[in-house]
Image (cartoon, rainbow, N blue to C red):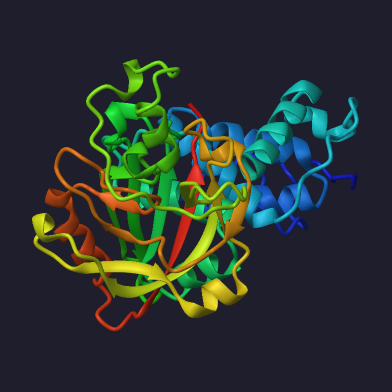
Length: 351
């Protein structure tokens, strides 16, 4: 850890290239740059004091965003400093420094909570969601944000496929966000009636259970089955449902037959994404309605973003949006006019 020359007033000396902790706080991005620079110089106490002050009085969503923004700026996990930080102890205690560094590391490496953005400004919402893109997305997603493209963020509360008698629940969130690099103007549009989990109505294994007397019928009562979807990854000649795994997928425009939604617009993975992507499809190979516990198969272009219906998510693994919201989603996605490819960042959220 580097040492620091301290002035009589307790701040950094005039020769320091970074503002002292007791300087007036600037906007979030200036604060994040300041904190990250101090941490890179080993000035953990000052960084802790600045970040603590910036978080005070802010909504939890913004506090979490600041931690993620610092982590994204550093692009690496921090080492916990020694228990006796020398001059840095003038700014924050060893416990405070250690807790702050652990919190920053967790923010950069862990799934986020579903943020409560009620009452936040558009700029605050952008900081919340862009920080999730920065920490959960890949470089293509980060580059897209930097050049002003529309980026799609999906936040998934994991459901079992039999929820709501196999019709699914719109309890996930889709966000379309962008920032104009010329003037900094941000646009953030949230869609809370979305789903990124498959539903059992398309599950051949669940259909088998529903017609087999040895299984408990309670959770399957009233389920209306549709044509089974999926891929046989277990070799039992029964296709397993799947869902898009966490990560970033490049999408482009396609169509989807949803006459009840009044639109055919949809998005699906590009050929480049299928050929080169590190994203996968999680398969319900254990036949328990939980794709997250099974095996993975290669990404294909059947996994879309499209409209569902009013009382059914209509998802066999796609991301679907309630039809009353879908036209607004389409308009948000097409807001740049000339954009033809979109980065879709999908992350699960913690409860």
